[in-house]
View 1 (cartoon, rainbow, N blue to C red):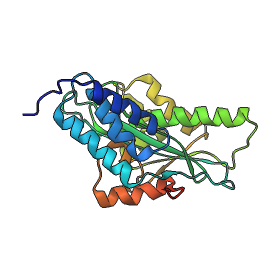
View 2: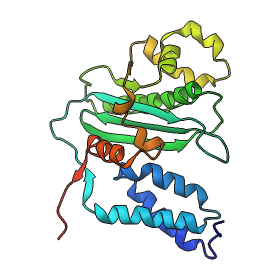
View 3: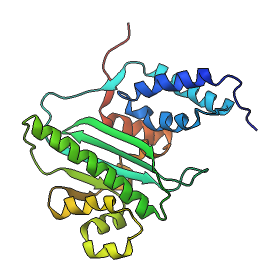
View 4: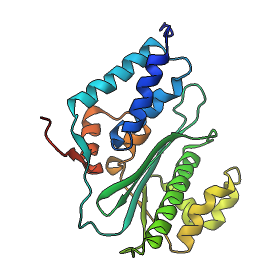
Length: 233
């Protein structure tokens, strides 16, 4: 059994610094979000996991996000969830990433606030979170007088969640989902958002909801716009 750290302050300082790094390194988002949940009573296992993250950062110290100057002004997002993955609370993890053209501008990996009774419910909560973020970005683009090139597109790999969003009469069977989650349906019905399917092997948000296989992880990172932006001296 792993023992608790005698002095957890060093672990807390390390995670606090890594949290700032997630502002420019989305590939670290899920790992740091998970490790930050044990700030109160970290164990030796958690500290070794944090050191593993440091070794990963050291192997790619000059990696960062690239923003193209001629990228089209159109929002595109991917939404996903990992159902009941927390062994202690059985809560699901919400993950989404939003692109402006080809540039990644917003992403999130967060444990959901309530327990979802099905994978569809967990996916729908993730859809709602992504939709609200896309709506806020659309308002921001409007304030900056930047006209979008097309209707925002949101990709989801859960067929049942997409069906709920497109079929309002289906909501009678989903009364246990909070009312604010139905914002997705409102945007779809108003043609302010296109909700489209995506294959599971093309779902970029796997990196924000779980630990994918190393090969899968390495294939997703470049698609997020992460690249070597300079060579260290």
